[in-house]
Image (cartoon, rainbow, N blue to C red; front, side, top):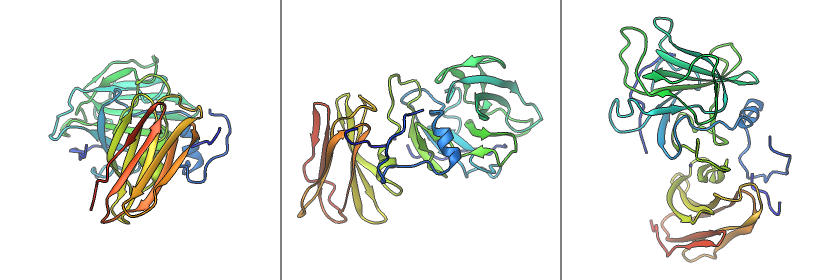
Amino acid sequence: MKISGAIVAGVALVTCLGTASAAAADPADPQPETTHQAQLLATNFQLPFPCGQSWTGNSNNSSAHTSYEIDFNRGGSPDADLGDTVVAAAAGTVVISSHQGSTNGFGNLVKIDHGGGWSTYYAHLNARSVSAGQSVSQGQKIGTVGKTSRPGNNISAHLHFEVRQGSNYPANVRKAVFNGVTFGYPNQTLTSRNGCGGSTNPHTAESVCGSGYTVINSAGLGSAGTVYLLYNKSNGYNCVTTIKRSSIGTPTATSAYLEVQGSARKTDSGDFSYYAGPVIAKAAGKCVKWGGKAGSSSHDSPFQHCG
């Protein structure tokens, strides 16, 4: 949440089986959708891949999917990610590390118990790097992307990932939350913050601006943050937000602005803990200036993105 004063297009190419202290929230801040989501946010799950890698998740490309299961791929061809590293989404204890044989379509499966009834599943692995009973830390390698399954089930390489709570399958499969933000079902491309070190900002430009907005430009503000320009093609609005990358959770001077050609500049500026903005204005068919500041760095664009 923002406290004043106080995230490669792709398609899964497969068929498979399957505590922060209390604070007043800005009404525009993204909120957990359900009690389950609030609990899941507290686990601080991260994408199950190394820091900086971008992966496309798809929940509807397989006829075998029954709920919020996700298939992850990167690269433009089948098996492009075969052998890529898979890491633990959160710390926990390995309760399954085995090849499932003909039991189901999971092939090489790792299941991690995170406590409180929460667990994660990593299926079709090419190789497993952990054993049942082993404690793992967030970001620790647990295996590699593969295409193992039951005999005769030929699939392309991918990671089948699930978050579950309880044991009543498939009702126990929950929406995945990565870096504090709910996965954009049915598909979304995300960049991993797993193992990046230091504090991570749970907010992304898309989560701040809201549904329908897509990043069309961005500018780094040193190590202090990044300012983003987004556009919603369904309504013709632009959105600007500055996401902090340092002093996360500590109020520091942060700003974001948007100026539509022919209109007055709109600015959000103050001592914010996570981000400035969103600054939103209708700009279809017009040029915009945009920018922001975090720490000692700032960005000011010329009029651009006219259209």
